Length: 264
Image (cartoon, helix red, strand yellow):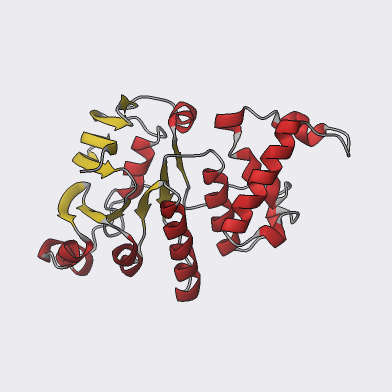
């Protein structure tokens, strides 16, 4: 059995009287593509925010590679080997695609980004050269090497999502959290992202994936957890979760979105 790289026990988050995440347990094994699904407002993004340090849980524990990170800051968690994407890419529009990817290297390299951008043309450090080469390799991985010099402000939605995936990989994560990486995409674009996720996983990165596209989850993931109202309702192989009556009810029954929870 593979070693757990990310484990969650009793994770709970309340917003006033609303319980957004309710005593959730999850265990992500090394080298898995792990899927987290649920209808709108079920608590998926809140779970990501809790385990990545954006929010503090009210109860429960989070362990990364055997180390407790329950109340750690996002930058500390990134330095320990877990990076994430967001539903909105939050790129620096005035910087090039290459430079935006380089921003993700800061937790590992402590690259002097300000010095990099203010340095006179034609001068650069060895570290900067290596960082640029690595960033270009990651742009190749996501199919945007030809756009390396383009300002990020010129990108369309799909390209923005791919750049933030490359930026997250620049931090050399052992665990990568992808929050709705195919949101707003057509079938062709979703399949393209799916292929990139497979390649990332084949390179040894454990991936935790949240997506509205249940078909994408079922085709990519080794293990799936389904939640509703912040509670786990099913867990297992993609086929077993898809066949679970509670999952069908959650997706096809009454609307479950809860006001006050910023979630997908």
